[in-house]
Image 1: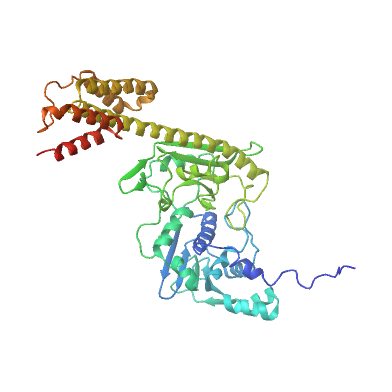
Image 2: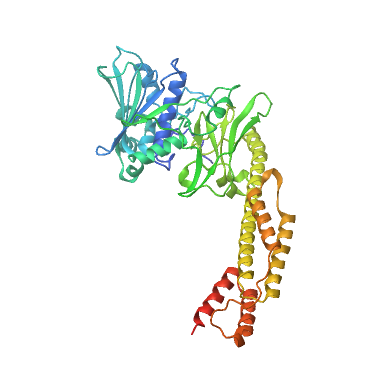
Length: 494
């Protein structure tokens, strides 16, 4: 007979590990979690200007401080908010963080997390310290997570001298060696925050103002001024004026496509987004940090560049794109790991409608690839015909053979003209080159008289010319044939 007795514990001892180390695989995620909490606090504040987050990295001390100038918390509120695990007063779909576990993310990669806060001048500062190793040891000893928290998490009241009137600060201390290479690396931190967190668009991004205007009917995405150490310039998003493929190869943004995905019940928008169309030269390098159609909720990235891969007919084309989808329907909620959204009809509606938009991008990418292939073929053909003209006029071939080469080139020009796309001025430069070549080839007159074969005896000219004509037929290009002919003539000199 099964045991139906009430279990002695409703919360397992592994909960603490699950909500710290079990939730995060990227050490840099702690910056997302703490800046996310700062964003929620600053969004709720009356002050809309000067929303600032200051980050200080102390590499020798293996510690990081993240302080915001939000409203802060009164002592009683701080204790109620910062002691429970997986309990939060925030609202799903409205607040960025709402599960009550993100504030402990630092314990997945460090020894301790300390919170300091107050809500107004004259108040003392509340200091709450979570000591990871001590807490874990006590959980194993007592087998009671709640009791261990009450015994091991320290709560202090400090004098308020030297602190801002209102603020909230997190200090992550004793960063582990396995995570220090990222958490304490300023360049990695700067890059991650620019890509993931709610920081402003740079002014040189050509569509910055247009993107801001997309949200006229909805709340404009909140942005924060996130400053690293003593730097004067806040961290910005990674977009710029161009897409840099290599040192000498770049592409420019040409057009902004606006996206408005209606909700299931057509009562407003489910998501608002944009795609910055370019020439689609190919896969954008990963280190640009801009490729892929990204998802954002509360202006914080959900998942990574691959989040919508499966909605593309060919996922590789997502690497050719630049764009963002901002979730505005509160019923589309990021999951606990914030790598996708919780399943349901609203998420399915987003996926179905977005897939149709992304299909059009694939069509653009394929068209751009086909066009470039044709352009490369055209340039190769133009080069081949230029070389044909040079070989035909060199005097190395019989007049009839030279004319035959020119005739073949003229026929090729006519064939190219039938296949070339002249819409919207495409290939205008190439067409001008084609016209010029056709005129040159049409006016070609074969060299007559004694050939330019140097010191070769007259009795051997016929043999040499037959050899040269054979080379002209079998060589990869007229230029290659000409070079081999000149090499033969060079070795035939007495």
